Length: 108
Image 1 (cartoon, rainbow, N blue to C red):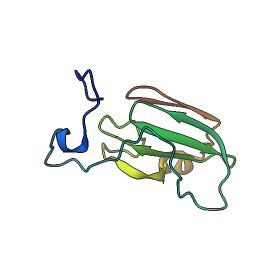
Image 2: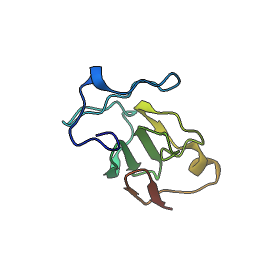
Image 3: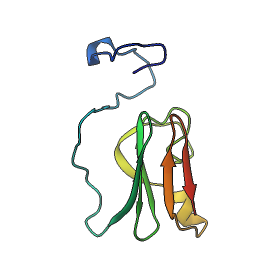
Image 4: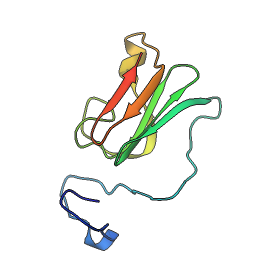
């Protein structure tokens, strides 16, 4: 749903944005491509984004990123999981993650 909407919009009715990429928001399970050596230990879903923590303490996020909730230092959206590089650069290990409507909380 988009802010102020009572009913979901079809792809043809979604608002256009010149600088925004189309992000597929699916209401059903879908297979993901994570590197094969990664084992997921935790997952959380926000209203339009998802995050996983791996057994190795890495955080991967994807979905709608308009408010920076994906943690990549920008407001870009992504249909594919991307590792949050900030945690690795700071020597931090993610333990758990909780996604809110437009936020992501990570316990390190």
